[in-house]
Image (cartoon, one colour):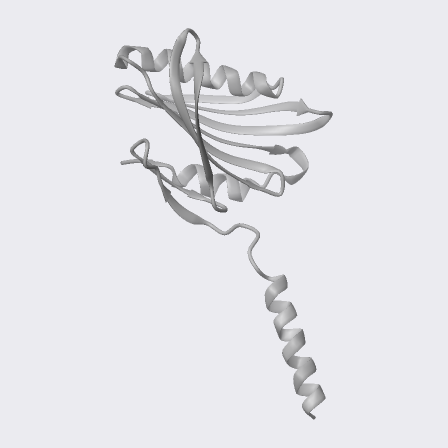
Length: 166
């Protein structure tokens, strides 16, 4: 009877561990820019200088990768708010170009542009879902990039819909 109880306990523990979530959604609030988002894992952050169509800025990226799919938010501040639309457009162009993608769906609403794109990276079909926006002197890119085979629409929607400016 003890062996049967032990076996049942081991099977239950195995079943519970097998059901552990692939996505460990956690609230992230940027120390660099006024936004919050849910990441599917612990994000890493990195800041570097980039050129956005002639505008030199420091961009901070926060990103988490789950099974080869990258969930990322990039933010930068331009010198003048009038430069923000140009910088946001340059972010979009660079992301699409990075995977040699073709935009298959695009929409705009005020200062927010959303895209879906298909491309290839190292011979692997890739999908990109992106939102590019600006507010005052701040520009943002909210993107999910991954192989077409492992791209989970529900996770993309959770990530994208969780992004909020403070």
